[in-house]
Length: 275
Image (cartoon, rainbow, N blue to C red; front, top):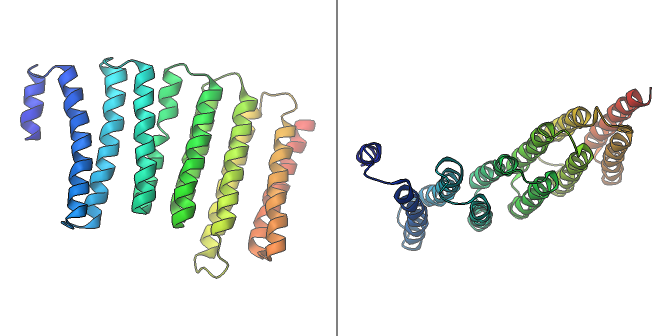
């Protein structure tokens, strides 16, 4: 069937507008099929989750193609449709409690900042989108204790902000502050999900240390051309210090050690700017 549709499309029997309409119809159809199968208890949970996720990615890709490749939908309406699909993705992730779906939605949604950059949106708008998206996903992550999704969403959020910052030569302070806010949200949720008795405790401590170090490296790259860039690093050091103090109060020795180490590295880095 797919081969036949491609053949029809290649010979020009389907216009670009018809392709987009059919793709949106497929997206809606997948949601309907998933809902019917779920209500009638036909098939496995994995199948319905795949259908819900498929509807999300088909809608996102269709909107991107209609706006950028075919130029059928104007960029601003396309942005609105994309945000609606992202809202659907976050909502279905919350309702279905599936961590793989949450990761998929988070990763796909974080591709939108590059579309916003293509549309010449201001840096502040792009940054606000990433922060709001990241914060919204935390509602799903915290409610369903999805630790892996937390690490992946944090990594790609930090990466998205950094890449857009590297693509812009101005407003580096805004992007640096955005990184700080994302990292602060990450540590807040991480502390709420942390369990001392977990057998995966060393892994979780190592992952949060790695994300903290990764953010510190990107922060240095972003602010390297700024005057008084050390002030931003001092704010980051205060954040690590706050984590260290909270860990001390909770008697989390390993977390305390990692936070103190990050704070010390940040202090040493900030001293390089004062020379």
